[in-house]
Image 1 (cartoon, helix red, strand yellow):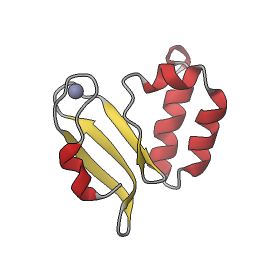
Image 2: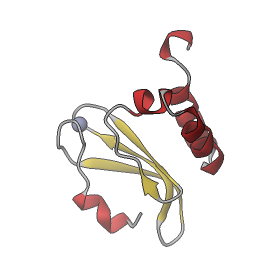
Image 3: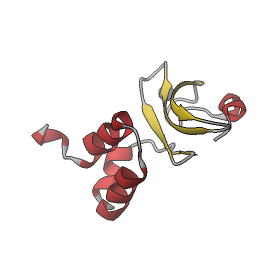
Image 4: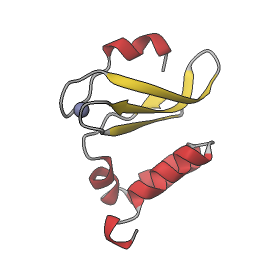
Length: 93
Ligand SMILES: [Zn+2]
């Protein structure tokens, strides 16, 4: 995503503005994490796509193949860890 589009993005849960933590970029943000300062919800940016999903973990739990794909798309360890933590059921972490 373009960094300039950040001002149009809002937290899907509470509607607050999001803060960007860029991990990898050239002309666009390739990988990063968007964080809502209000409710602490985090959204990954993978392969230039911001994934603004309220409950990403729940979403992936019924879509294991998607989780694996996102994991493969991710280049940085930080995003890989993020996706991994979302794939694993919380009770075994
Ligand atoms: Zn929020």
